[in-house]
Image 1 (cartoon, rainbow, N blue to C red):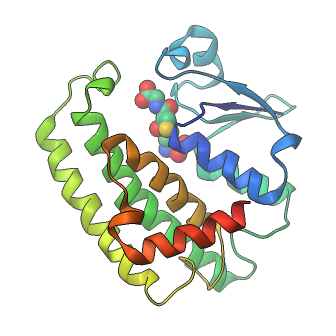
Image 2 (tube, protein in one colour; image 1 turned 180 degrees about the horizontal axis):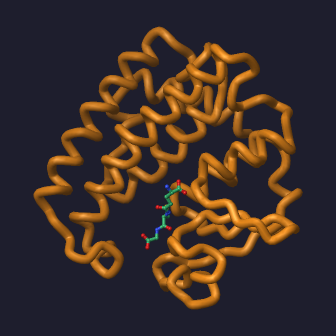
Length: 202
Ligand SMILES: N[C@@H](CCC(=O)N[C@@H](CS)C(=O)NCC(=O)O)C(=O)O
């Protein structure tokens, strides 16, 4: 199987960090594409992924899986240890709840802010709408505060242990730097959580 990856792009990083946490990064062939060079816009890659986004996973039987969380679900199935998506119904629900909160209410809001206001994104986000970006910035900052409050009483985001939800938040903290935002420095509980999470990712 082959994983199409773009280093430093946050969604592909979710998948590679998930594999890293499983100790399985070497088990998958990785092909890198540069988003800035628009290598994901070529006809060859459109044939792999009609949505022209990374990541994409192509299985040996030719099946293509896109959406980073869906790719992680596949890897969770074939590489079950360590469990990162929940071992029982309650854990599964709590981990999915937090993973979706981070993805939809923080990651996506931040991406909307970044894509609509950063000059480097102008070729990819046509047209850029600064007002949309500013509104999304407020939402992202408000969500970071909520997460910080949650982490005051919790070592990890969900189910009392390290999970895919922490990997999603971890990738976000790196991505936030593109807007010179360091939530792990602004918020003490996120900073302490980041140190714990880095230990888990090795
Ligand atoms: N929901 C998708 C989002 C994928 C996505 O937005 N990938 C970005 C990189 S982080 C991308 O390919 N961007 C290319 C573009 O916008 O043209 C997922 O979770 O995989």
